[in-house]
Image 1 (cartoon, helix red, strand yellow):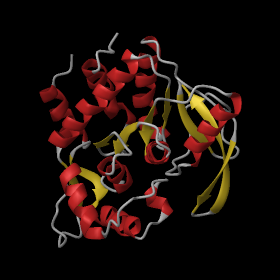
Image 2 (image 1 turned 120 degrees about the vertical axis):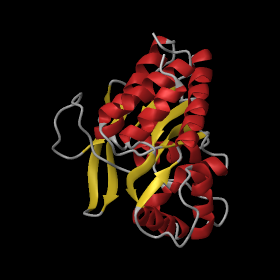
Image 3 (image 1 turned 90 degrees about the vertical axis):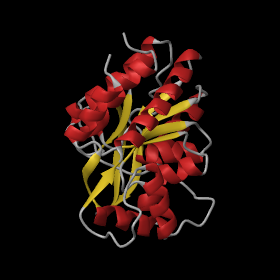
Image 4 (image 1 turned 135 degrees about the horizontal axis):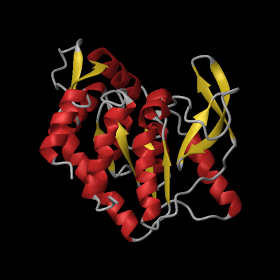
Length: 271
């Protein structure tokens, strides 16, 4: 059993909370782009209210613990570990509820190099608890706009977790994938389920467009988000994302293993 105090210490030591690698400049740029409704940062969410930069800064100060001072323009950004711990508790409660009713679940990540192991651990535990871990539309092509133009990716699954692969990437099952913020992969997965008449997920677990894209469609969604990912926190504030956990999403993949243990312990899903 990993105690709350031990996890708090790990969050700070690993740079998952406290001063993080995401810079203040990156965060403020994202808030500015979100206020302008740039799809690169809205991640498939269509906000109901008009969020300007100051609104977003106040929200992120409340949800993440970043500085609420608009005059602070450069340097490291900060995540309050107490907010991370509180959100992880809510995240675990949602997993426990899904496991309790053996709900079909879909897991997906736009950060496969960093977060695949975290989600795969959850997928294993949910499957062992009797949940159907969905893997629809494997191999389906998804056209995603990038800074290099529109590129075609393929939808794949590794250990029950969805990701997209770049053209020419290694074959199915290898643990590599592309970084993406797009909501199109989750839409493709859901379309695949509709095509075969399969059950839709009652819970989507992930990050970036996986969470916002699902939440926008009315599916319960929970996930991790960095200080430059305001869309998930806006979705939470507006009721379309159930839980957004503030955390640095770009550290070494093994640093997330204690989070998996902590969440599964809290959800009573440890084996």
